[in-house]
Image 1 (tube, rainbow, N blue to C red):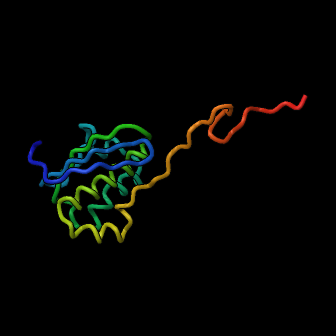
Image 2 (cartoon, rainbow, N blue to C red):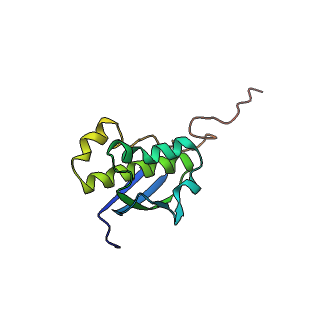
Image 3 (cartoon, rainbow, N blue to C red):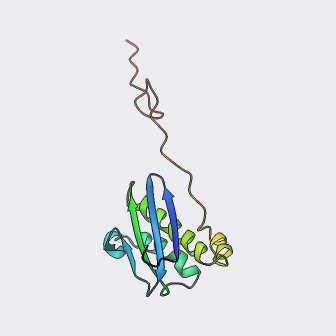
Length: 130
């Protein structure tokens, strides 16, 4: 693809982010929109930029990201993991820095499935004694 130097996939809950990295000026595009348009909360913006801050790569790369599924927080965390993994695919020396800040850890928590004969995963139907 368009001279990309790094690619990675990040996941969180049901969100999946495909991250393409190329040399540039620090522009981050999410689903063909500027990422600050899509993520308005400050903690989401900070979590997305955190792998770039700890590796001092804020103005060195452009990112083209496709993200789908889940909610805004799950998508932001999926993008964070995808950016961290793409930085490692570009330069293996970033791995120990990102590991130190726990940015390469995939969060395994998923929604528990609904069980048959119950209202939800754990919730039961209302019991009537009489």
